[in-house]
Image (cartoon, rainbow, N blue to C red; front, top):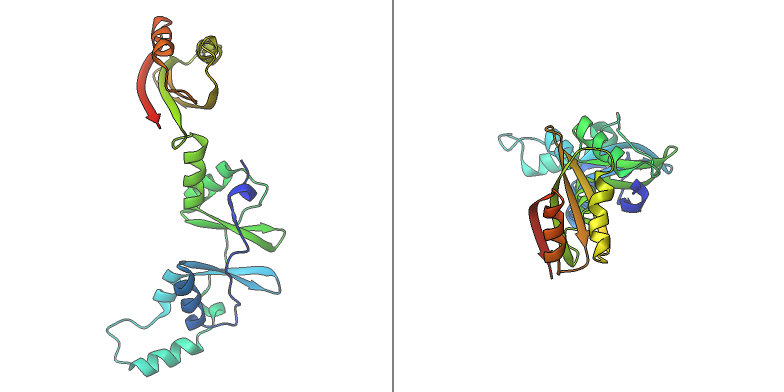
Length: 213
């Protein structure tokens, strides 16, 4: 799955010449914590709620509310935004986005085509894709099966499901360090007793069974 399939297109943005109150209003109105900063259609930075808090006077300040409001209204976004950006292409894989977020310790990535902002992708988008990939909320049965980590084992495993005419909708493999793997197999059926029995007769072990109705 690609970033372009999961990103938010036409995200809310702000100009570098707008001010902190402008950013606060957009964030509060739309319930967001970050804004790409765009000038002439090009991405030039990012401003977050944390950036605003960092540049706002502390509660211990001796300034009056009027003075604070005045100072904030004079502070432009270009003065507080992050310019050294981590971005990703819309044609990159979601795995690349997840790895980049993890390595760079960021919660979202601006998605750019050239230097043009085309969307944003967040941790929540990655989580949603992960849940969908594993079919966790789909109707049917998910069996987590312990299998030897060796050539041909996946064909043997799925072949047993085929014997019973089961329609496999999802497969995921978690490789262990002891020569075994945990294989998650999702099917759109609830009648799995015979499948489970045959799996165990062929040396597989059922680790977990989940059914969603």
